[in-house]
Length: 261
Image (cartoon, rainbow, N blue to C red; front, top):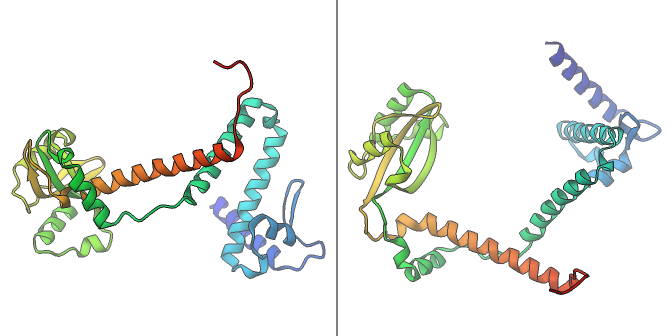
């Protein structure tokens, strides 16, 4: 209760401090760090007075957290450790690399592109084992999921729309990927049907079986559309990284000085 009262008091004081006119222009401070209105704009890219009360409090709280941590880093002399400094730079480089990669062109993964990939890779979609196209639902309560199962048989998905039951997705699973109780349930269900409610993790799972593909069967495009999309996205990501690396090497001509091998 004390913590809640202190948090509420801190929030009120912070809001009051933000709205109060200060001749020095300081809107927040922590230790020896002070934030002025001009500094806030430089730090965040926003004008303090243009923000709503909640957003202003959130941004100033973020600045205070950073200011306190930065001073503690200095006090502990963490940046005097070369290992820590190197790790900090590596993390920053990963972040900025992700930004640069996001600016690389990324063509849309269209249905026609997926169909073309499927047509050119037929052998990849022959099942080495029995496989099942399934759709699963999860809920903490066994009884609630049983009620949902009965409703789903009547095409009523109100509980799903309300978030009462979580839709886990639809995917193609091989027999080896399913745990024994689920595999048994799927094998004893007709396509289009539902398994019984089964224990899973800290709750319960219900599975709808859409299609069965015996070992050696050729999968249809609908069954592997998601798989192809993921593959194309992976290939696209690899190409973007290669383009970025090639561009950087071309412009900066990196060299390691020393004896050539």
